[in-house]
Amino acid sequence: MRRNAFLTAALICSASWAFAQSADPAATAKIHVGPLALTPAIALTNIGVDTNVFNEHSDASPKKDFTMTVALKADLWMHVGRSLVSGTVTEDLVYYKTYSAERSVNGSYRAGALFPLNRLTLQGNVTYLNTRDRPGYEIDARSPRSELGYNGAVELRAFPKTFIAVKAARVNVDFASDARYLGTSLRAELTRTGTSAAASFRYALTPLTSVTLSVGREQDRFVYSPLRDVDSTGVQVDFAFDRFAILKGTASIGYRDLQPQSAGVPGYKGSTAAVDLWYLPSGATKLSVQALRNVEHSFDIDRPYYLLTSLGASLTQQVYRQMFAVGRFGVHRLDYRDRAGAAIDVSNLTDFVHTYGGGLGYRLGTDVRLGLNIDWERRTTAVQGRDYEGLRYGMALTYGQ
Image (cartoon, rainbow, N blue to C red; front, side, top):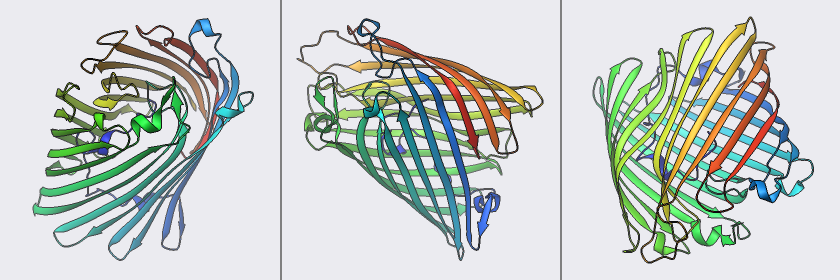
């Protein structure tokens, strides 16, 4: 799935924050330089053709172009006494041959520290994103913006398998002054600050599985559009499966009570979910499932937000020795909420985005893979001129991913 716009502070409807890990991540790093451990990765992806660069309707003669992305990533760890300092650096260089204005350099950075005491564990992270890409499934323009986030937590080991924690997070989302979509200033509509706090109770079911119950509160405050301000209260249950378990990843289900500060904006009371799981029934097969259900802010002030429900899955199957095949699909539903009294062309709008793809890959070594991919995407909507479909095909070469 492509990245969604600002999943607010991740404490209400994201996977659980697990402090204890079954293995030291630094021990599995590929490179060690003194106390520093790191795992680098590089990928040449999307080397091919994008048949609809701007997600245009078929009547607008969609533009085709050759494109390529160079993705660089490094995970770093370093022990300082009993503490663990970690970081992640990601740089994506996006190239378009003809439409040079769509070229970009997108950077994502994280620095964190883990301080284990006798019965107490402290953890904190700082994240920064500077990008020019599509914020989600609604906005088709590649929009320049930055996001600066902080989060921290304190966890107490109350009993051998029982942990109690308090968590807090803050993120500032700032769109550039020239970021616009369909004549709307994204800076004026979507620049905001999100804060959240939560208390949680975690229980280790097994050495490889834990369950967490969290209750939290969050706020979104819009710098230039206070009509959009919202508060929400949520409760959720998270399941975390260690990377050495048969079923790996995280899954959460919850309930959210969204309370807009403006009387003309309807609230939302309902379920939330975030799932990212994969299963390895054999060394030749991998099944992955992702799901998301959450409230997202819209650029349209007459439809201030929408409920995003996403489901995706992929299957990787070895077909012959080092050769494997991949199939994937995704469906994303955007249910909009109308502002009372607004002049709206389509009431109770629901958009759908469907994606299908597949490919063949070949392992050139332990860490190097060569692949051929094809992906098709289509949006259907009742708003005239905003539906589109496009095909992207090409090859990819990856190391360390």
